Image (tube, rainbow, N blue to C red):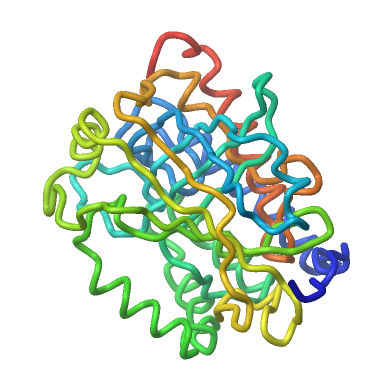
Length: 335
């Protein structure tokens, strides 16, 4: 294995303007979550993104016995316990709307004593259309305000979206957009899932890919996704290979350019995610709905890397704090 590029906190640092915009964005996140039960078709406060839960399940992370020797210290057990949440990326939950194929596969890894090791919110699209932190914050602030004001502020959203056009006109982005369009009606468990941004693995920096094994893409085609998933997990086991790429050179594996794929870094299989049939948890139970998959709650040597990733830290914190404050009276009663 070539010499990996080492993590440096400079990859994460925000400038003063970005910090000010982040504080404004945090306020709109809190306001959105406080009003989310009115914005969505539910009677509880939702997440600020990936609001719609399809299922929550128990799983296992089985370590490949043939992983490279340099990676073995990070995986010192044969298996780890998982909590997995499958979701949709929509900001709101509207029962009358057709779900777009923007799916989440969030993985929480725990040790044998139940202690949290790492959270990995994965998505079925490997790239992100915005590299500018300022544009990202202004756009999502405008979106939050638009929901709160019931559709007003669309001009502000359009103005920020125009700034993203150069980022989506790359070969990598267009190729993956076409691929997603062709798979738009495929079963949610047949997609590959990606970390999108980079994560630490000790001093290394990596990207993660989850690749399902032997899942029929035509399962439940055009049927209700949530009900199809419940029926699938009653009768099927699910297995996906866990693959990583390692950052060796910023030219080929950029940390803060999320709109292009990494190249010249082969995928390394480190294990498998396994969900046995009949492993679903009650997603309507308040305790399960309040689960946080904030990747910055992970052990320090598994945390995200990069400026866009850094924004997640504050955004997740304010979102979950507000959700838990509002929903705490429902704890144990189901929602």
